[in-house]
Length: 394
Length: 98
Image (tube, rainbow over all chains, first blue to last red; front, side):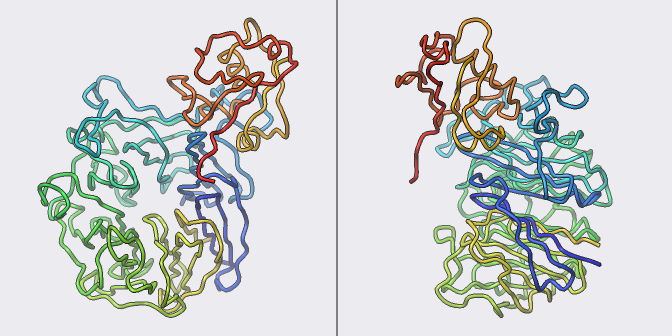
């Protein structure tokens, strides 16, 4: 019997929504970690019961949580409740420790990045925005953090080590925070080539490694951003999210601050595919599970007005990989709707038909069991939704 | 026995329901109390003071016998009433945002 598990991170806790393959009736579990910000939760493709969660707070800092039973129970990796010593001699509490690498390969020049006013500012760890488990190993997981850097754990989240070649490749001191902070929010692991990793940073741009994260280079050619001094600069673009279909890892789709973009050569060159969208500002973008040329965005009015145009919540779908878009409105509020849909708050399942899910800052999680043709709120009154991930259970 | 009262979120994280009691060897200071707290409740490492710098997180404050010790050097002795267990050390989160 197939089923779906939706992992929802909110401003005040995490929720796990489950349904059978019909996706009509939903059970809601939560809030987990009530009162904390849950920036992101994600399950391991190699072991669906292994979940990772980023729990954080402006008061108490960063906590990494792990579940080995599909979200029923959680522990800090290496720090089981009630035990005084960690397994394997691991110092307990290490799982929350994200320390920038200041060793020789990184160098002292990386102790600062650019601040909003153009001055240099020390790199300061604030939180984990995104957790990306390995497609093949449940114990390997990547973390994208603010201030922007990429960390990896190979021991199930017990300890974290920076892949410092990203900050160290040369452009790091010129990275500048966007309104949400200098955050590494997107991590894509190529399912066909373990050495290839894509990441994206607001507001630095997209970057690619072809050697498993050791070395990196910007992949922003073709992006044009009118809000930076050189609109076609090598870095400095506020990329909001990037999506890929696993069958075509060289084809990337991007929702930039303004503009929807695609690349057919692993990010070497981008072209705009905003086409007939009513506004091409937005945060989320995702790809249909079975149709690699079918993509989804949620247009938002502007950078200053983070809500849908005309108070109408509309998902736009393109079946041609961009340029030609259709509005999907059935079941979505078409008046007086002023919520936002944040960058990690859309996901798809791989059932037939493909399910599409997104969460709003108003606390609704909408689901479509027919690839976007119609929508139903599967939960309506959560705290503001920060992230939505979906696991298809078979 | 040193008594410490944690903010609600940290009680949940440490899986304790009320105040915690700690054995502290040597002088009773902010540092020695927090060291003992983190040994007994390692899941709190990084939540009260920074993992690396060991500095107090900015939105937390320490009160002892109705006095604010937040800005005192971490090795300053805490009052006798804390050292004897008569009074608890309060760790309080700043209240902001309503």
